[in-house]
Length: 508
Image 1: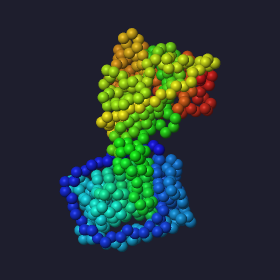
Image 2: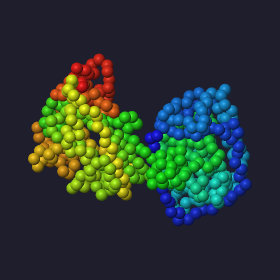
Image 3: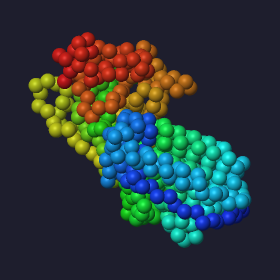
Image 4: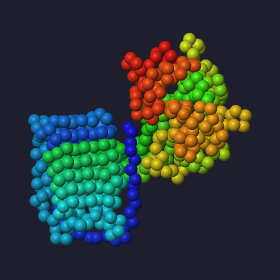
C-alpha cells in the first residue's frame, strides 16, 4: 500500500485547564454499529483509503473511488432500501441522544482553541460544547484516567476544522471508541491530522490527505469525502504492536517502531530514463545510449522522517559507444548515508552520490539497440541504505537526480535530466558549448537551444526507445512538441498508438 506519513508533534503543556466530569453516557449505534463511513449524498475517496467496517450512503446511491480505496471486514451499501437506510436512521438517533445530554456548567469551551500550545487543554471524561465553530491547531490530550473506554462528548454548534499535523490523543494511549464529536454543520479534518473519536455531522465530512481517525465518519445530510485516510467501525482498541502511534492497519512496519510508511516513486513498474551521451553535441539524438528503469521506496518513521531508501533499477540498453557510468544524487549530506548495499558512495562529493556502475559495457555485452543483432538480458540492481538524522519526507520526496557520466581525459562529462543540476565534480566548462544551452545562473540545465533535452524520464517500466542512430523526434512524431512545451503538450507521446504519433519502423 502506498502510505503517506504524518508528524507526531510533541507539545509541552505550560498549564492545563480543568473541567467538570459528569455522568455522560455513550449512545448506542444500533443499526449503524457495523458502519465505518456513512454519507447521505455520496461517499468518495481519491486515494488508497483504508476502511475497517461497512461503507454506506443513503438516501443517495453514489460511492466512488473504490478502488483505490478498499474496505476491510465490511461491504459497500447504497440507497435507502439497503441496510445503509437503517444505519442512517440510527446515526440520526445517536445525534439526537447526544443533543439530549446536558453540558455541565463551566464546560462551555466557546472562544478557546483546542490544542493551543500555551495554556493547552487537558480534558477529563465529560461533555463539552462550543456555541458555534471549533478549531484544533496542535495536540489535544484527553485524560481518560487510565480507562481506554472513557466517554468524551463534544457538542459543536457549527463547524469543526483541524490544522495540518494536529492531534487528538488519549492520555493512556487508547484509541477512544467512546469519544464522540457532534458537529452542527460540517467537519474538515486537515492534512495528516491524527484524530481520535467518532464524527457525526449534520452536513458534510471532509478528510484531507493523510488524515487518520480512529472512529466512524457519519454525515447525516451530505457527503463524506476522503483522500488516503482511515476510518474504523470497531468498539475494541485499534492495535499498535510497536507502540509508535501508528495503528497496525496503517503501519507498513507494525513490529518495527523505527519505521512506519513506504512511500513510492511509482505505483506501477517504475519510470525509464534514456540518455544522449554525445552532450554537449546533439549527436544522433536517439536517446538510447543508456536506457534504465528505476523505482524508489522511501521509508519514513512515525514522525514522517526519512530513515531508509531502497532503489530498484533495470538496465535495458547500452547503445552508446562510450563507457558510460550511471549514478544517482540524493538530496542528502554524504555523511547521512549508512549501511549502503548494492552501490558505491562516491568520494569527494558533498551530497550523497550513489554509483551503480562505472562502465555500462562491462554490465551488458550487447547494445540491445540494433534490430536482428544478438541481445543481452536486462540486468537488475538494488541499492539500499539507511539515512542518519534524515529530513522530513515532504522536503526529500522521491524525485532524485539520476545521471550518466564518463571521463574524457581530466574532464568529467555528466548528462542529467533537463532542469537537474550537475554534481560538483562535473566539468562546467562544457556548458553552453556546441548544442548545449545550459544557463547556470538561470537554473536552465541540459537543454538544446530549441528546448530539447539530452535525457528523458517517462512514467513507464519499459520504454520502446528508437533503434540505433534514429532521432527520437523522427520515431515519435510529437516528441519535440512535448519537450518544447515543458511536458504540457502531447503528454502521451510515448505510448499513444494512434496514427500520427509514431514511426514504428524507427522503434526498437
